[in-house]
Amino acid sequence: MSFNEEAADLFAYQHARLEDVGSTNDMEALPALLGYTLVEGRESRLVGREIHVKTKQPLPGRHSDIAHEASHALAQERDDPDALHFEEIIRHRHAHTPNVEAQVEALIKTGQDRIRMPTDVVKAVINICGLKAMAVWVLHQQEKVYLHEALRRIVELDENARMGGFIAWNGTITHAYSYRYHMPCWINDPIPDVDDYENSGLTIFTVPGSPSTVIGLVVIDESGPI
Image (cartoon, rainbow, N blue to C red; front, top):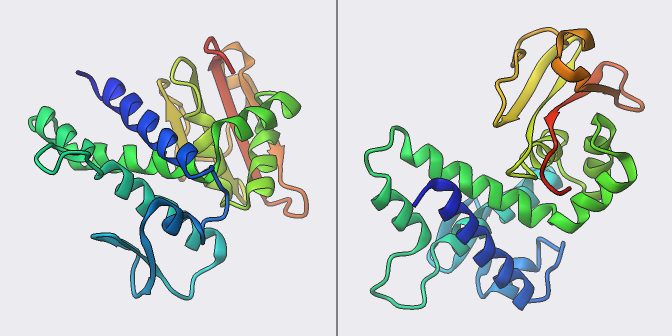
């Protein structure tokens, strides 16, 4: 079984669990709805049935931490105490894969983004804005997430698409993500020229009220259903 198949199973399970408790965007209430206790702590982590969240941090970061640990929690649930949970299955089946722990953590982070920014919400934003850089800013504003999280969610939304994106400040890229596409520019590179990109797939959006902050979205192939 490939990482993609296991990821699909994990995300389907997480979605079903969230649907069972009446999907909510209230991250403070989410742990209790899922059967976990939210605990204030020095760092964010999962401890048994407790979701510890780091105190004294901005609200978007706090809520993303809660979603991240909830993603871990759901990935570690099991119906049978003798059965392997999702994280253990991936580690077992891909034990010889380089950086398997990083692969697991990447899946958990994707689960976090799906919890914070549900697929139907992301699709609604794209239906209004189009698959363009502006959609990243609108999603960020609407769901009160960090700008780079909104970018990552849109870039990774459709497993059949080929996309990349970046956020730049003062002309230099500070965050970059790509999915099934080798994006020529990356962190610490200057903002690229639109003409440098195949199929003219790059759109640029300057963040309102912050002219030094620019979002770029590169759409090479949007063949999947958006």
